[in-house]
Image 1 (spheres, rainbow, N blue to C red):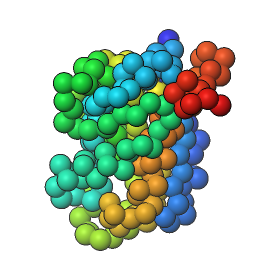
Image 2: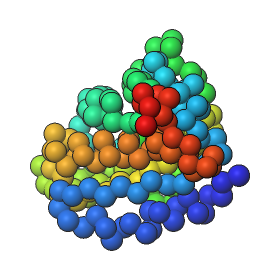
Image 3: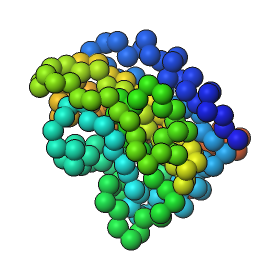
Image 4: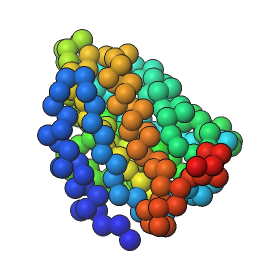
Length: 196
């Protein structure tokens, strides 16, 4: 069973790494016993995967920002093809979801994100077009339980169209679904990748 405290440790360890403008840093969090290649394939393979986008460092239309984020997530993961979307169709499995939380509240842990309906986030900067510091906490949940997590940071982003923002979202998505399953002796996703 995962403990809440140690899930936050990677966040503290990498805070100093994201200090160069436009360069993102991503730290995969430890996976729990829920996560496995088979679990992800069951949850998302060939179907919609419900994705919640919380927070918006840039302000403006939240729906448009969420579409930008989910568009940047497509194809940025190991394993079977899936469709990240905030408006899943009937193919989505209801127990599973991904949460992409931008600048989460200070008291939030990865485990806590899966347990909450409303996610506190920092308000956007009032200055349009000014460089921003962004933290992205991503979690993959089964119900209210955490399966995997990854945290990314980037400095000096001025808009969701920045290449550095694209890199942040893509790299964090990739880290959220590890190719190897450390809870099962480093099992790889070979069956879904056409061999190793």
